[in-house]
Image 1 (cartoon, one colour):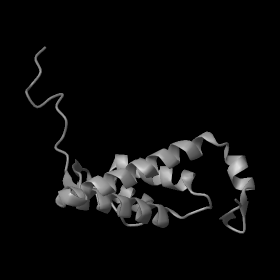
Image 2 (cartoon, one colour):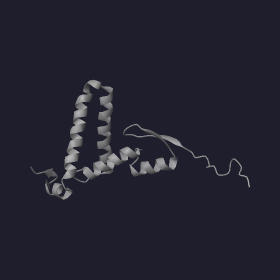
Image 3 (cartoon, rainbow, N blue to C red):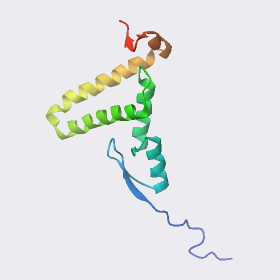
Image 4 (tube, rainbow, N blue to C red):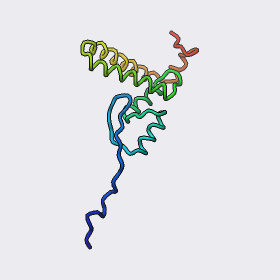
Length: 127
């Protein structure tokens, strides 16, 4: 029994190029996948890594935020990093700010969420 060269091969798949609106990463994806990602992110096409960062923004927020607000926060952060790469003289300052933000996130994640929520009164932290 012989197999012809066309048997067992996958059918041609229509691929489109999509670029992440946060970090600029480009990927080849099916149109259906691009549509699902845009639907999930309210019209924005976001790569998997940025999607995880957006979810992290939502979970880390002191109060409930929308997906749109989380995307906006992540896009602002991503733009700052891109600007730092374009202007090396400002990159040290932005790197320090990014490290400060990462350290705060790490420290805040160590405090149980219920204790953080009890510290909130009217949307503000008590000191």
